[in-house]
Amino acid sequence: MQRYFISTEQINGQMIRILGEDVHHITRVMRNKPGDEIICNTDDGRAVLCQIAEIHEAEVQAVIESWLDESVELPVKVAIAQGIPKGDKFEWILQKGTELGAAKFIPFAAERSVAKWDEQKFHKKAKRFEKIIKEASEQSHRNQIPELSHVMPLTALLEESKSYTLKLFAYEEEAKGEAGDTSAFAAALDGLSGNERIFLVIGPEGGISVKEANLLKESGFQAIRLGKRILRTETAALYALASISYHTEELDYKG
Image (tube, rainbow, N blue to C red):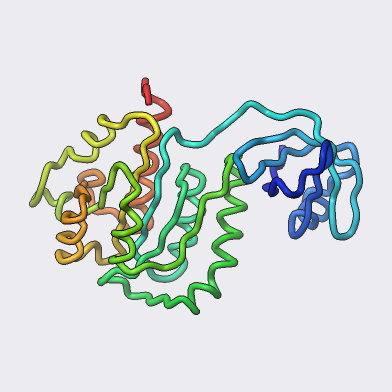
């Protein structure tokens, strides 16, 4: 059943007003009619089964049938800080990362980022990025839409990470077996407890520089490897999210 995200302000008693691009999707793409059922997710993470009552040019009105007791969110909150990649790779990361349960995406200007996004350039891209996240959230039946942050330099990234309980960064040298504990990622996941907030830094195509790695470690980040093979930047975050999902949702996790 198709899902749409709404704000709590769109709810008035037992009625819900659906606005914006969702009206076009309901009427033109899905070709719904009055009497059809849809699910709406509110911005506070709740889901409600609705029946379409009226369809107008600028809005769709739906009647609340029942509130659903469901959640498909990861039991831990994961923020992905992604070194700005080339081309449309960031769009892929947003779409698939949303499907895999990320709670937040933070593009950051890494030393080895070939693409350069200032605030003006990012602002032009942000509307498309947000649309990709929203549609992926609907497709994967998420209860909440992941947050998209503005572009940050590493210094701001380190400040942002202070509110997180587990801070990790994927480091290419770990996969080569030249530094650190090669089982660090598995050990970190084994040590998870309830309500963890995980901050994961992924480098761009050239990876994290030695200078950045040292600054991250000084700020309490732990270097990890993501398997024995060197992953592309657009694969790394997805590998990590899939591993976290398996550990916290499929194993006998008691968090």
